[in-house]
Length: 528
Image 1 (tube, rainbow, N blue to C red):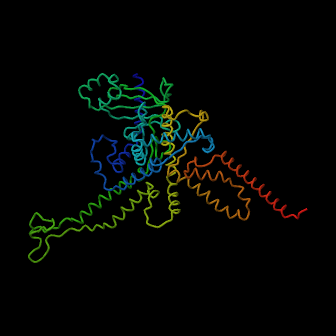
Image 2: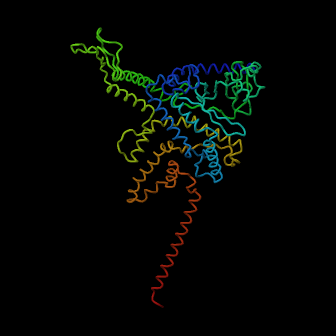
Image 3: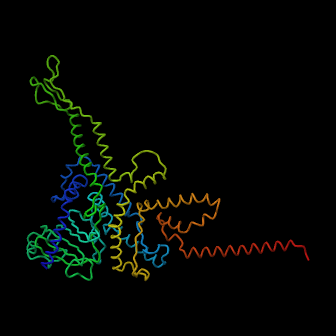
């Protein structure tokens, strides 16, 4: 047991040494962009509001909140269906009806979990995006307790340390946090406590103890657990004592990075890039505030004699001796000559730079110019192309692991029912149909529409040009990329059957027409 603890603590030290290079920047981001949302240098008492003392301009904070809220609403909106499932090697509309029903039921069950008030997914995901767009790295813990709802909890980055595997995916996660002795006994039972902790439980049950939760791949341990892919250890750091040992089928911590440099473990964000501007605009705003105060209440120039003190520079105040007997002023304000208009213009330029770094123009049109709906859509598509690599990383590092884990949890609980034979041993994939995903896919829809609009005039000259287009695939592609539910479209078999019925009806009508024509001809013949 001691060897296991030493092995885990050694890996934890390695993870913390990697993280230490980022903590200075994270602290600056926490001070200026996420005040009162955590501390990396020391612990802050609950309710402490002193960290906002550095903030004189909230542009960075507002821009970060807007980007996080836009990603949350655009990718995981609780008011709409934002993903679907299909087999990986065939299109969704080619799947059997049994597979389609199973997939649709699975999506509905997972959305019920995500939208449940008991799971906490909605509130925790917003916190997740706030951390992702500011610190550049975010962690979500998914707790699967038998007999209870699936729980989601965003863990502050100050508690998290990670190690990556050979392909750059975080597979080892350490979380260092505090719990009271009473909470520890409630969670793991009195029998799991160290003997010294038992005494503290009697004397000071609300004393906080540092806990380390380590989740690492089973193959990293000398005796891997064949049942689980990941080992789990909860360790009392003050007494180097294992409180609980177990395992997970999947990594319970979902770690995502907004963007990432090659060779680095943690991500970077717009806040990293615009941090100098954020610090600058706060310094400029502080200077401008002091300049405004000097203009509103400038220092006073006094003659060295003949003036009654103290000066009454309040409204309606009277300064005795402020004017000499010959009418000369003995008290004058010292005007500093500050041009507040120029300072305000410089501040606005820096504020715009910060908003641009957070891609605000992709979500809000700040100019008042009138534009058509098509122009607005094209402009938004152009802006979102800048976000495309980040959205792709969010989908691969956050959304897909999230959907996969919740799917497997519901499958193990038997909520999804029996898996169709067609699905056994086959991989499935996720189609993202959130507003942002559809907006990015809409380029394909626009391209098809433009192509058909160019093709139709040519078809009037030569109808054979339409033979090069598979209109069935074009329609289904446009439906998929527009978020139209595939269940409203007919399957290939249904289309073939419908067309066969039309052909038979046309053939019968043709035979009837031919019979009628023959009867008309015969009726017009002279009698024999």
